[in-house]
Length: 280
Image (cartoon, helix red, strand yellow):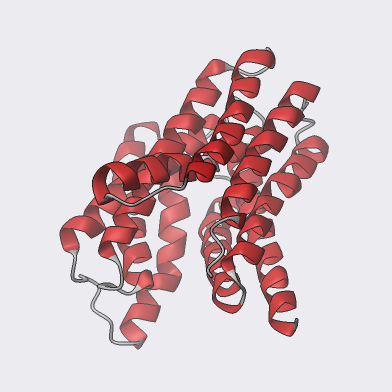
């Protein structure tokens, strides 16, 4: 019971950190998405590189081709998700990004020849029905934002598969560090022509992106380490709830009944999918 309480606390901290990351990205609407990616990634390197050096872990890793591929997939997913926040409410964008396990299951079946239970496909169908509700019945949503979030989820699914291929051949921080280095370089290069010089509190917001991103990942990992997956994983959807609340009060975002119904279906389908994967 004590471990479960710790896991819940860690996952709640992670969800809050992700929520503030989303909110700060949303508030930086005047900056190019590439500049936001640059600051988000560079900020995390402050934590990952010292960790690897202190523990004498090679920064180059072992599965270098896969590490680069994972980083490119992750960079594409992150960039598209940040773009989606410019068009649709944060809670909707986060919910759409969370359908990544559907694409991951499909890619696992296709490339890794892994089995997917029939019941899982049913639950995935429930989640995807939520997407259709958002896409077809909520006329307030901009199609660009929905497409950016959906394609972001596709690339997130590819990230999961690539990480699975890397397995335990590389330390998790090496994997993250590769992602952050490549994202910093590419984000920095692509933002040169559209660079906006931050002023005042914008510096604080931009520099905090990497901090929130790092601790969000750290505490999600801690939660998974101390609690059972089927009990802890559904708690990551707290991010959706936190994000909707902050969106309502901070950005005066509007959620129609169809939006809320679609979000609920997505969370329900994915939570049920996690529940049947309980280890025996």
